[in-house]
Length: 254
Image (cartoon, rainbow, N blue to C red; front, side, top):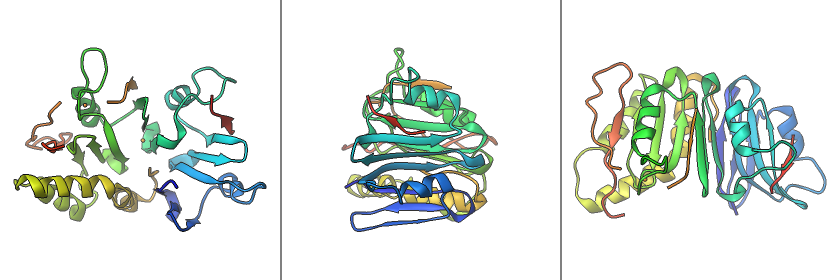
């Protein structure tokens, strides 16, 4: 069973756990999916963005589908490269974040796409790619959150990442800074994994600061990971960085 947690504008949310689904405030078209017959079997991913944008990747009796509205053009093209030919992504591994200003970040086991990111985040993502545009070992996306006023959190597959909350949540910012403090290898691995697993909470805190962003998403790349180094965060648009963990319309899918 998939696990999915997303938070959207006006206190909307969806939670898919191994034992139950919980939801509130979803767009009417999305809510209607849950009353259709035959019933949906699984929700693999949901993103609730500002200005009425949304995406639901689900499984019903006919197979995997994506139901979506008002997506950024670059994301739509990545999902459906050829109009009428169906979705070309791996639905069970799909992750999508919809942020303000038509920003987005999406990835599955086969690739990734992003657009209109805060400049510092875009720079951090590009630093993790090689000359062919592929992510270096440990630098591919693991979890991403896009929040108000250009705030963001990016966790890579190596347990490193970058963030800049831009004053949106001091408690979360302190938690991330404390998590980046020097520690022995064993505790570093534990902290890194807890951050990755807990990004649903990160999305909650980012979105709660403004109440108008999606939870979970230009350029594009092929999924895969470079070493992030600490930034001094002296500029208004600078990033903070974790060091990598050293040990470690519905369319059918094509």
